[in-house]
Image (cartoon, rainbow, N blue to C red; front, side, top):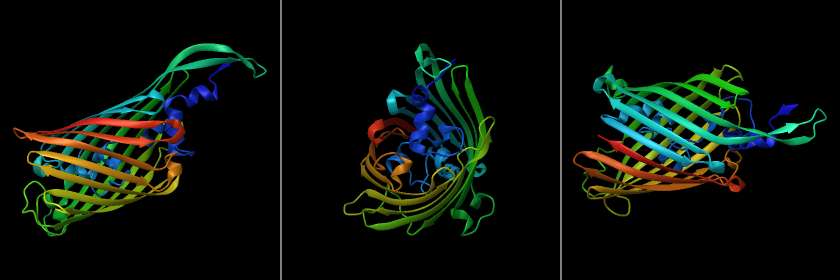
Length: 335
């Protein structure tokens, strides 16, 4: 008799994803893999912020904050040498809202199969097979003030995305899923002031609240996708301690069908230096079992503005104890 051993499967991306997502009943493990750069450096506490392309993964309502064209590429050097590549794009269409999409591909490399006798004993190695996952998404966000303007709706954003995902191990296993996300963000402007051009005085600038329902769907072969509900809040301050900086403090509460309740918190410090920016980020996942590690993450980035184009390079380090660590690096362009 011929079959894959549990050890071989554990080497695949599916088992790696399950390892840190927790033992649960949901299908399509690529939907459980922590994604993004800035969001993950802040411990995943990004539901209320989500003002960039990572909104496609975290809260699609945040796409509304993109007014031009944004492009993001991320490479994740994942656990056990697995490579996870992501490409995002969004276009702001004025009063019609913002459209975006992403595509992710995760390669698990080759997995060595083993032979087993009818008695269940080891009978040598078999051929190698490949393992891979993919995820494609189309997202849309709109500001309600563009539909019906008043003092409340001008600060209310909503969004949705549709996702198609799949996973496979050689010729013996494959699964596909369709799911969608829904989200909303309300931003309370405490005092009008812009990070890029303010007077240098301390300002408690903004507070925000977000809600997202994610992975609402099912797979074709293994049941429900990993459904979750996320709620979050953040505050933003300008010129704290020194001039020309921005500080964000965030906290999220997540409930998912695999691991129950999880608390996340994050901190971002960004310093403006003429046409350049430097950022440091720190996050904590307060349910370490969800990450199979300490739950800490940290990262940073540098950005510049040249001839109207804003670009930045960001990095995040996420330790997973004995499993190793995930290191992500990405290039973000706004034009």
